[in-house]
Image (tube, rainbow over all chains, first blue to last red; front, top):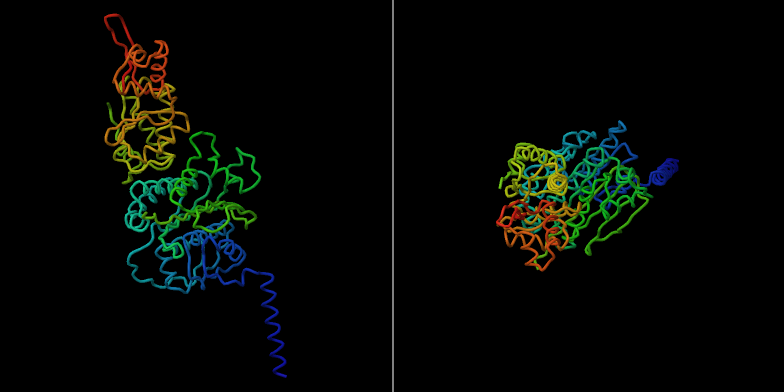
Length: 310
Length: 186
């Protein structure tokens, strides 16, 4: 009798699990990485859920971190404060601490545990720029100043950049951050980190810049008739289109594209439901993507590899 | 030549320890300060905008400072004055050049190490004329006509066009055979 009851209970439990995974297919997936590659899954999983479960996360990059903060920004606009279950991995927590993620995350989320465990000494840091808010022009001076201060230890040492290339890097960074102030009508975040990219056998620097503002399509809508988000991104990135009529506008993104292409980097811009990527030979992925999950503002990811010695 | 140290102007207008000309509002503040100072400069003077102590100049700042100053100089807003970009490094030169080209403008620049060159866009025949003036230091329409085997009115028109673009100075000189216009490098 007891066995039959146990079997019935087990069947009910299994049925519940199956139903849950059909109704909420993404909620049952365990997030182990937060990067650009997993961003669509991140959106599906976390936008609908009250709980953002990062306990299984073993790798997170600036795009993942800044993306999470922008989800928080969006939730805050809707007066929602979600709970984030922090990663169990000490290494990931240490990295989040180094990137000053918690300082910003506390504004948007209830963190669990409330006080992240102590992370201990760090040694040499791979952080080129901690997560930094972009709200006004003065923030860009701060960003440029910090990157310049650390250029020697990251850009020269690990990417083998010379002075001229560092200056190009700083100009590209400045332009991409200004894009938020001039076009998003909202605040944004930027973060930069150096990694070792095993499959390439090279060091790389990852730059993530995001906002939850009006996005490319709405920004350009007053001047151009656009069919969709992809066309809006193309107009801005490939044709130097700007919401302003002045001929002196619209250099910024084109300059960023030139710099990234010159140094065999990868650039992707996601806005609304589309993403456009400039892919070097070493990178995987699709150049044009549409019908993605709708997310406001713009999400920009740049990967710059170490300069070859030959 | 009167020199404006852009690092100093940046410090006075923006504050802090920044040495980089980045963002449009920064460029606007620096340009407005230069415009204010230009009013005090005597007519006919050449003003060197000294970039030698500045870090980078981004495209927004290059547009606000270089392109807008040159554009307004050509429209006569600053009177009979001339601008020269001095102490440039390669990065600064490239970004200012892009800003000028986008608006079809041109300016004379002096690189770190004193090498002078033209930035922006200019017809080839005017570039050639400018190079000739730079080589000679000062020329008249007759000098140019003789050197380049041109009609006198053609050489005069070319030199006048350069003067209108504020790329050379045009000064009146009294000689034995009367008054002549002499065109000089900035």
